[in-house]
Image 1 (cartoon, rainbow, N blue to C red):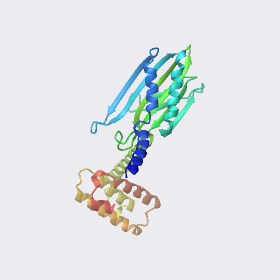
Image 2: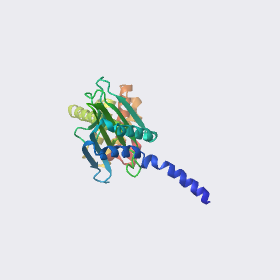
Image 3: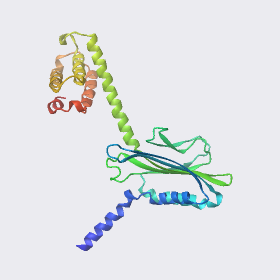
Image 4: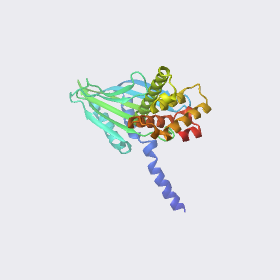
Length: 282
């Protein structure tokens, strides 16, 4: 039994460093440059925390350095550290600005300027590398953030100049999903506002309105903040009846059906429409 437990413990211990200390070598190599007596280092720091959870939501630690040419060993030490930690990174990028006006930037939660530069277009001859790592579960319970460690350097006028970056921010995948959700909400609000405008311009009763116009009137009513749950359920019931009797309306087009289907999918996720019967009708 003890042998089995010991093997299990060894197995767990082998995996823990991949998330908890996956950038240990890079951190140590960065520290070696900052502690070098001959190094000239200037730094910039930014830290942001969630006001509700007090968890870190953004971080930028940027160190610009100048080293004498005879301390090139510290540069090699950093590159070796990136190689050692590469196995636990999920993105690795490296290259050199050979005068082709390229730039490399990392997203930053700091609204000014919103990015951290790894490589500028006016840095010809500069080599760079960066790696992305997943934070620990305790640090990022929802898995929406990532760490980025970046480094650049070049030899210039008998010295070595460069930059070290530690960056913590939302992942590009999460930002893309959030942007898509925001766009869907804007599209829905625009469609509803158009429906309301049409209803105000066309006070005809239901018998004179097309199937699509009646459906959009229901959709617009569902979004009105003044309505209570009973009224919203009544509108949803009317919409359900229109869907059920769609074959009675010869004017209905495939496009009408497609647009309404997309709108109702969005409505189902709106907080103020979370009534069981309403969700069922939608």
